[in-house]
Length: 147
Ligand code: HEM
Image (cartoon, rainbow, N blue to C red; front, side, top):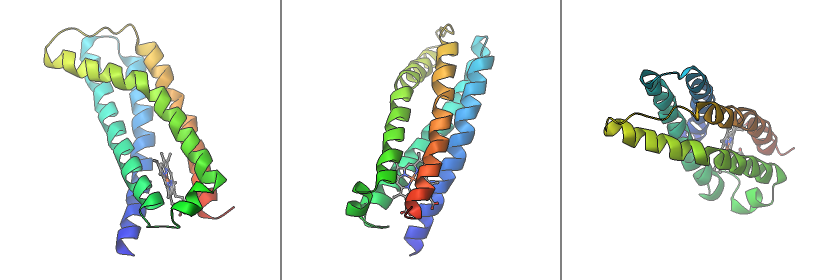
């Protein structure tokens, strides 16, 4: 019971961290005009990465680790499948930003300048994820209440 409780708490904390981080990354990208501004983008991105780890780690164990209603229940639940479908879209939108920020981190390590010409596209790819994450919360609550 205690483990189940803490996994539920961390899953929700992932939500709080993730929504704040995705917004902060979007804002930092929009304000990134010079090399010194990159730190804010990468800082927000690190928090978003942490949220993703928490979501996936706790979520998969809750769904398929026998913690809640069991694998069969979730695989046959349209809200769960819808929620996972949205998460898949979020992951697809995240491919380019994730690759870019990895390259930026490597460039910063080597002290080479970072190309800031794509910040607009990266900001768009970031903010598009926000409504999808909010929609996932609607689906999660419906799923949890057996609607
Ligand atoms: C691999 C990713 C994920 C998996 C496998 C997963 C799985 C789950 C499971 C099994 C539950 C428990 C539902 C129940 O009580 O029957 C849950 C609850 C919840 N999930 Fe996720 N989740 C994932 C990602 C996310 C993300 C990205 C968000 C937010 C954007 C999210 C938001 C929520 C919320 C808000 C609840 C609580 C619902 C409630 O009790 O009202 N989950 N999730």
